[in-house]
Image (cartoon, rainbow, N blue to C red; front, side, top):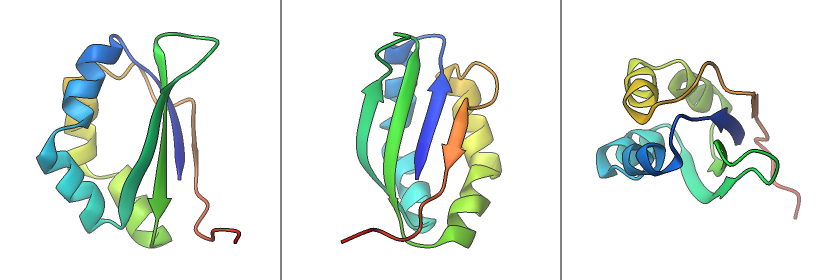
Length: 91
């Protein structure tokens, strides 16, 4: 799963994103973070890469109250620029 999101402050966003409770909720939905990046073209845009183990659970997380509250605390600006689901890894 790949998410691209504009944020008010990368530092603020990262503090919320790294919260162990939010990570627990992500993992309950089959999502494991494998990388976080700052967009080369916009220093206020983050890119998150996650292994996804269950498409249905990942979609549930994307629309969950927990994520909505975390996005607000983290200073997410608007909706994500994009969310891409890739449930099958190419070996």
